[in-house]
Amino acid sequence: MTMPFDTAPPARRSPLGEPIGLIGVPFGLAASVPGTSLGPAAARIAGLADALSVLGHQIIDRGDVAPAPPHARPSRDISRLGNHAEVVSRWVEAIHDETLAALAEGQRPLIVGGDHSVSMGSISAVARHVAREGKRVAVLWVDAHPDFNTPQSSPSGNMHGMSLAFLTGNDDLAQLMCGREFPAIRPTDVSVIGARSIDQEEKEAIAAAGVRCRDMRAVDEHGIRSLVEDVLGSIDPATTHLHVSFDLDVVDPSLAPGVGTPVPGGLNYREAHHIMELLHDSGLVGSLDVVELNPMRDIQGQTASLMVDLVGSLFGKAITLRSRQPVGLSRAA
Image (cartoon, rainbow, N blue to C red; front, side, top):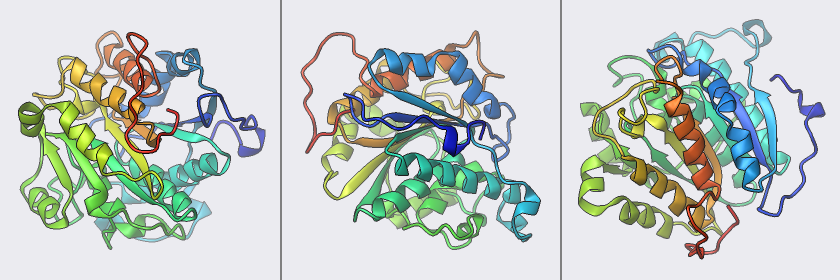
């Protein structure tokens, strides 16, 4: 952390809901391609905080997460879990702790990565926090990859591809966090939209677990609005907290070249924005992470600019003034 907890500005409720707690995670070792560790800096340079402030939101930039040094915790061998597992573990714990602190201080977390292992820390903290209120977490995973591999099934051993398996309670991956137990996300409370790169064993695990996976063929056949409304219509805000995990590689590489693992055939510009606009209209989003921005692969900052625009759409940026049509009992987004 570049800003200690005790010097952070006090949280005040803004007219649009909770202040937004911006958390950067400059980490990319859980993926195979370097550069996503520069994502938070690129997002700040692209004007993320200013874009949200213009919309009337109070932004509390909590700085960048930093992991505890290796000597600060007991030594243990978890190398069999995946590549750089010990380092991933320390980062996941730090992300978890910082996200939990933001929630405790009345902020709505906006976590900017970093590779998709970031979500292991952010969503586990959200699940732990809302469980105290008697709620569970529903996850909307917008990604070209469902990240449901395990240490046994992963072809690469890269741990960003195991994030959802960890969050839904894989016993082996539970070793990544020590003393930070959280209620596992029910697989049936996970909805993946935009998938188009799935390993064979991963496909079988997704089907067996009951994860709702809407691939790009489903987007083509049903349209993005139908798929998102199906997810939102299943959420009871009285009992469920919605976390959105948005991987920029869900967008077609022609529009978002600066990502960690580009896959052709992704969402177009309007489909990506329509997801975020529908989420804003619903008023249901309680926390968000945006990951895999890789400025080393970007072209004149176009992916960073797209990320800022997409997050802006989720937090209320609109082309014209529109009447909100919330799904269920609305929270201000």
